[in-house]
Every structure is written in structure tokens, then in C-alpha cells.
Length: 536
Image (cartoon, rainbow, N blue to C red; front, side, top):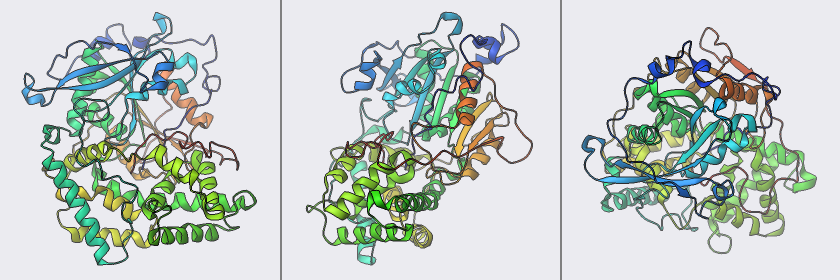
């Protein structure tokens, strides 16, 4: 699953950054002398010199970028950095240029707020969520990782795998378990049969090298970086490989190396169960609006009975229990709750599938498997997975007892890793001891993507990092506490962080976000607010 990164309200004043405030230059913000920036940026870098990027206007495939006057282009990199003169591939890149005066310019900021395999080329627009006097200081970059989206070539294994009428995720018997096992093995074989040379070269370390090639191509001694979820893990790897190439870095919902990726997969199940419970409680509170029951138990029963009914007879012959499961995975984000509740209500009470179809079509690809192919290619080859199905099934059955909502969805989504055609690497050894101070943002209580324990482990890996905790609620798109937003904006603007405290704990605890009011949102428009197409 993917939760949308915390989006910021205008918190400049609360962060001490009102108009006329004193702004530090890039060198003085991060160092004690005029030569410190040059000294810091010396050190390891990728052993490849990319050609200049030929920038041009972005196409209407990315309308948000077009509206911002963004530029798009391709970064040319080796398929295999061990053979830098060999076959080349192209990484799709976008940028929104800084508009601040030169004396306020802070360099390049790369945003990667994705799961493994998801498109990030449009994320150069993420800076628009920041106060203008902060976003204007940076050139903002987004990119599609190698093999992803508009990068060339893009990986595909079986374009038909994401059809509407996919089988139920939750098996009722051994026959259904065997059917899902066969589907996962068939998909892994289809990837092997694709013959794509990408399969051997899509580890996170390869993508981190592409990131450093981007830095070199745009002529910057260092990068600023905002990473969320997999993007945070990529930042952890990049800052281990090239610590002096990092100027400022934010790791939002970071993933400990121990959890990459088997533990991470099953670690999502309990938080996702808690998310659905919180959503059910909220829906029940507004029964007069949604007509789905006056208690959380009643709402959850309607969810479960509808799931069972759709398994027996898919709506319109194609929208079955699998699509119902996937739609409500989006409850991880409170910004989605109105949309989901209205779709739930109109289907259960009025037998109207319109809203369900709009949400599914807007958020899940049915005509391409690039997301699944690349998430599998990265996750399956980054670190080992159990080779025997008994381990997978035992862990799934154990998890299902306490987290039935998402357990089997996660199991089958990553199941191709059991028979993946490329041998997995050992888990990468993250070491942030040489990295600069890093601000990590984490929602601790029912974050569906990463566990709070992971944030604490990553904090140990980065001894100069400060962990800012947004506690007590599911994250919501478009809102932020001034506590979290203020800390972030202050860090990006002047390079200062809250103090790090002693011990294995959060450095700053911020209050929870408010839950939404009923009946608003974008119900009926299709796209769930803040959600970039991305399955688990």
C-alpha cells in the first residue's frame, strides 16, 4: 500500500519564516566556512559521466507539469554500471525550476514519493504543496526509475494480469490456494520469458547510481532529496553509497533494512486492519449520511458480506471480491474516506456501481502491468524471500487470524518473488553514519506502509537524524499539523532541525490530524485525492 505523503498547509509563519525573515545561504546553512560545501561534496560518486539532458516542454501526458511550465527530458545511463560503455537505457526526468533570487537558491531537490515500481516523473510538482517562499528556492526534480513508466525501455511481463475479473485474494480452500500459487508462478515465468535485460539490473543500488548520474548530469555537487516509503529506502541507500553528495534529505516513513522486503510485506497487514476499523468507526458515526450502520461492527459486517457476495457473483459480471478488496485498501488515508464511504453506500443501498468503477479505474491499472512487473523486479531481487510455499502460507494464515482485511492481498501481490527468475541480493547494509542530518517524518499509530519500529531502527542507522512523529491518526492528504509542517519547512528553508534526544525514541511528538467531516471530498470524481496509481 501507499499512503500519500503529508501535504503541507501554509505554515511559514509558525515556522518563523514569515516575509522578511533572515534566510541563510546554502553554504552558511550547512557549514561553518566558505569552503565547507566543496569539502563536503568531495568523496565517492558514480563512476560514469552522463551526457547532458536535452530539456523540452513536458507533454500533455503529464497535465500538471504542463500547467507548471515544467521541463522534461531523458537521462542516459548504463544498463550495467560495471559495463559503463555498454548498453544504455533512458530515465525519464522532469523539473520545475526555482524562481527565487540567486542569493536564496538552494540547489536541486529530487522528490521520490513512491512504492518500488511506481511512476515518479510527475513528482517535480510536489514542491507546490510547500509555502511559496520555500519551494521557490529549489529546482524540483521527479523521475521514473529505470524500467518504470515513461523510461525506456519499460518492463512488461503479462499486460492481461490486471483484468477486472481477477480471482478472489482470500482463499476458501486448498484449490483456491493452488490457483493463486499458479497465477504467481505463471507471472514470474512470464517475466523470465520477456527476456528483458532489465531484470538483472533493477536493484535499489542500480537506481541509487542513476540518482547520482542525475546529480552529475545537472551539474550539482550535492542533491537535496525528499523520499517517502520506497523513496525513503532509496534515500537510505543513496546516502550510504554517496554520503557527501547529500545536502539535505528527508526520509518520510522509512523502512529498516531488516524489513526489506519480506518483513515489510507482512508488517503492513495489522496497520491496514486498524485503518479499516478506524474507517468503519468514522462511517458509523455518520450513519445518517452513509446509511451503512450505526456501529463499526455493523459497517464492517456490510463490508464482509458484500465481499462474500461479490465473490459468488461479481457486479456486472466483472467487479468481484478482488476489486472490492483493492478499492478499500485506499482507506489507509483519511483524505479518501468520504469518497470511499459514498461509493460503499451507493453500491450497498442503491446497487449503483458507478462510483466503485470510477475509483477503481482511476487508481488501478487494467491495461498495463508495468507497476506490478517493476515492483516485483525490484522487491524480488533486492533481498531474499523464502523459497518454500509452506513458509509463505504459514505466515499468511497466522497473519490472517488478526488481520484478515489485507493479509492475502499482500501475500499474492508479492508471491511472484517465491519463484522469481533472478537470484536475490543480500539485503543492503544501510549506514548513515557519514550522512548529513536527516529529518524523518513518520505516522506511528496506524501507518499502513511502515512500522514505527522501522523508523526507530533507521534513526539508529543515522546518528545525526531527528525523528519527527505525527501520532494518533491515519494520515490525511492536504493537511498537516503546524508541528510537523513547521519543522519540515524550517529544515528545507534554513537547514535547522529540532534537537535530537537521548535514547531509542522519537525526538519530536506532534499531535494527530483531525478526521474529516462527512459528505465532502471528491466522491464521484473517480480519482481518490492524493493517490498515485500504486497497488500494495
